[in-house]
Length: 160
Image 1 (spheres, rainbow, N blue to C red):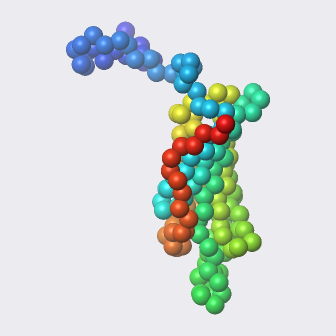
Image 2 (image 1 turned 45 degrees about the vertical axis):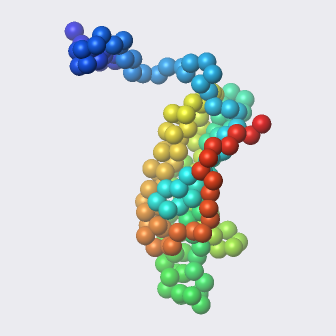
Image 3 (image 1 turned 60 degrees about the vertical axis):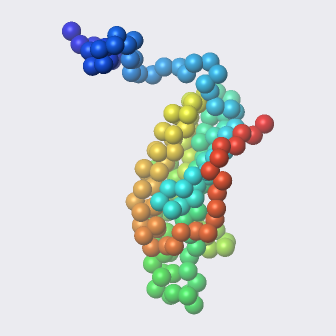
């Protein structure tokens, strides 16, 4: 009988490899992320900064992205109205929201809870969860607005 939870690649590779277990498992000791972690990346031309913080019995992931600037009326009255309509139509989404800041910058803010001791897979899953919730919003804004001039460091930094 075939066990759907575990399988052995021995039949495929013919090398007698150990069984592969699929399912929830605790990461090995030393494989946890630090208590605070910040990293940047670019998705669809939008720069993002992700921050993971451990607190009490859990952890959280916050994601911030700069979608662009609302055009001034003198630059493009119809363009300004269109961007503001997009902003109001997509103001909230699963796990996040858009905010129009005083400098007329549209920022995306997202957050999800993580396990008490998150690993890299937990962080990636959290980022993907926020980005999937915002995919329609991101697609619409990146089609219309030029990419922001902001530059991010994509290296991982660890706070002490």
